Length: 378
Image (cartoon, rainbow, N blue to C red; front, side):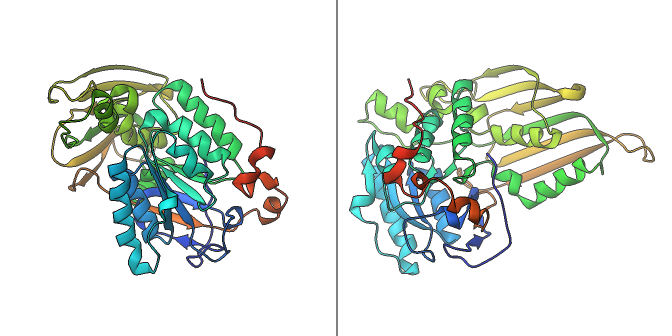
């Protein structure tokens, strides 16, 4: 999914540009595409998935100038906790408490928040298994989207998201949670590599170390409820740890090498994980083979208290340079289990004339009958 950026402006509906260190990644919303309230009001955000990560994403958008007006979750307790959190967070800004009519709970909550006329943009932070289904509903309703990574847990789901993204292109802003691509130190590093400052990459080495993700015990919960609440322990719901978390480091490798692996060989296991915490693996060792005969080894040993990412590249120097050297990047974040990552939210003015001629169906969800039906998921 691509996004566009522009020059700075005021934090309002028309020329909104806010750059802040927020956990939600980079979300670009074009003001001329946002309809439903006065032009100078705050962008109205709905949160679909009120767990820790989703609440952090939406909180950071509030810090950047948006307003959370609607919440949706499968579980009532998570919805109640998020409501209390955002009421307290937004009260100093002069916003009224969340309206009960804008709180949606249950398995159809994603459809209800998607169709709400009070929402301009939606943060999707549900278990990854549901991302294609939830994204399809949100885009069909004409809402801008920030979709947490990963976009899906398998190839068919990822291809579905690509298809949905094509429908949204030019009409809606859609961004995915690879916020590291907008972290200034990484941007500078990658720009220098791409400009040839370090020579040619011969091979690579990447690591992802993170602490165990704790979940509160629920003695009276059914097996189905436990599986849904502890989705990060479940391979089918999360895509496993290599996809749900490690994908950040793998994406950095793709970004640096400007390509994707042609093939991979891997081993994995659950050693080190507590018994009875699902079927997700606890460690991975992968050899990725990229174009131009570049091999990258990736490891996730699955332990450690600090979140620690390392990318080590063997570089062939430019012609006039000294013998081959090794360039190494190491970032460490010693924070709790759900750390915020650098990101920003901005609204820009682009394609105003084009959007004036866009179908009326994208201006209000109730007119979506003019939008070609995306079809039902099997």
